[in-house]
Amino acid sequence: MKHIWEDKKVITNPTDTTNKRSSQRRALNLPARLAWKDQRGVNRFASVVTRDISESGVFVESTTALSIPLYRLVQFQVEPLVLRESNDLPESLQQGRILSAVYRVAHASNRSRHGLALRLMVAPRRQQVDVEAARASA
Image (cartoon, rainbow, N blue to C red; front, side, top):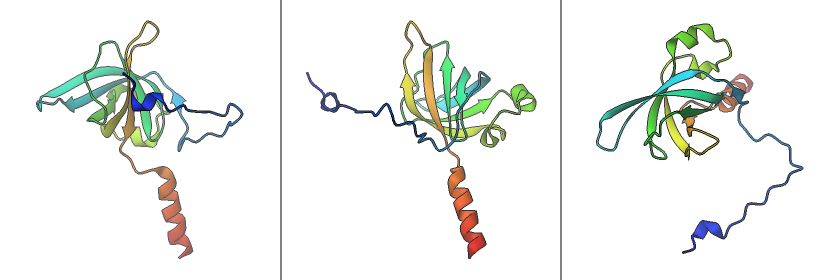
């Protein structure tokens, strides 16, 4: 059986070195927590470790498989002790718990653990700067 997406080939240009990310990623290994409700409405919790963090997203890994589907809303929080000691955290994560959406699931393999890419539900920093600039010029 052939799936629709198998016919599409992604062509990447290896000479294109432009960074299309909205914010810079930092490789940080910090203990964190996830909290969510499963499909039955039961509260679930998991301890995870961050691998990289930016103002708008974070990738976390878990030693156990997490049954969190794509686009599920989760509460993400860096461990409170780390918050007090770390100056490297983006401003959006220094507030404590933050609503996030799962937008990629990486299943465990021989080389890596189970991972989740989370999009932090924060206003993009670039848009805030643009709005402030527009107000100043008006």
